[in-house]
Length: 156
Image 1: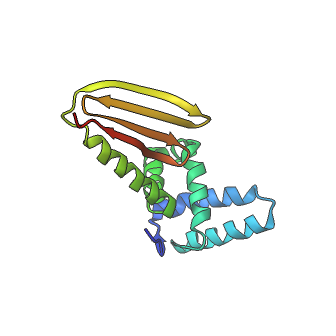
Image 2: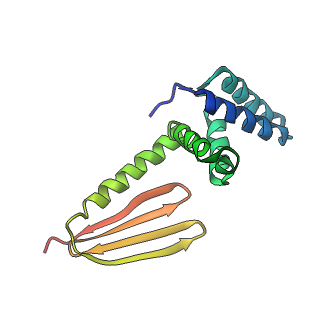
């Protein structure tokens, strides 16, 4: 998905203005300050272009992953920022990845469940293996998202 512009509704604009200002206040690096100042200008205009979209993704990831969005703005604030994140380049890639995993999981419908194994494969990385009477599906879950790692099908 190529993002050309991303319009903000009033609630998103209000939250992002606060968050970008707070983030800017803590930055010492002039280059980072300029990048986030550009983002703030676009937030104030109500529309984000592709240029500062990486900065937007960074702010949204921090605010959502830390729980700050829910704590300060409640479930509605968290939901609106999640919706906005899903429209960014990185967010839409994660949505696509999740849809692909859901498609693989739908393929298990009607099969007899055998074993489910969930294990850690390193810091922040996990593997979920689902065995059925006809296949074995392995999902990898890490900082990049969730994806189908392996699908073995038994044709017997």
